[in-house]
Image 1: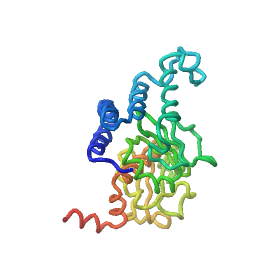
Image 2 (image 1 turned 180 degrees about the horizontal axis):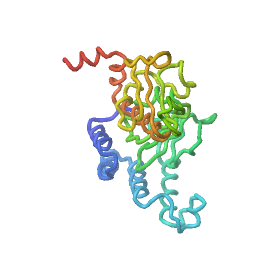
Image 3 (image 1 turned 45 degrees about the vertical axis):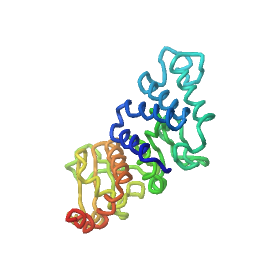
Image 4 (image 1 turned 90 degrees about the vertical axis):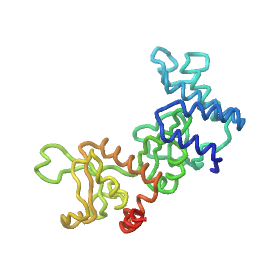
Length: 266
């Protein structure tokens, strides 16, 4: 998607302040006044209000069944308006995601793994894609364009699951959960490219880390990073996926350390 310098400036401000509604609302005003994109501006305003009051009112019967009725409570009216804008007023593909990526304002079900029509699920929050659920290859091909155009907060890979197990008796009763860079360890679902795993090594949530320099024996030669819970392991993966998507040079430097050294000298 091509953007003007002014629009890019607004987007940079939104990406730099993802929790602040003000840059989003200022951008909505600019869209309406300067670009005559009232539908896009309206969606931002509607979803910003949703972010403040919540998508569902616990006292509303329609909200309790996750229905949509514009004649019910304020939450219902906002959900109905958001759905109408997306389905009838905005041009197809306005968000920049591929056609087989499902984009809506509802979160992906916890165990959603993709389907025939859609390989990814994108949740809209406050006018932009905030959460992505997709396969690893899908993120590799589209992650950079999505993460640099939207203030994405979280990425969940449908085909990656942290390894679970123990390294030694020192781990007591608790399993560790993590990621391996070596194909000789893990089941494929817990393996990541070495450059990506290298970005995770300094994560403060990491419980145990083996770097390629540790030389622990067969299977460990490319390193691994483990965490106390699967949630922490998945959070760490989401963080490095977004970090690498927004600055691809990080992966190139991890794959070729000399490149990073040359850039620092320059």
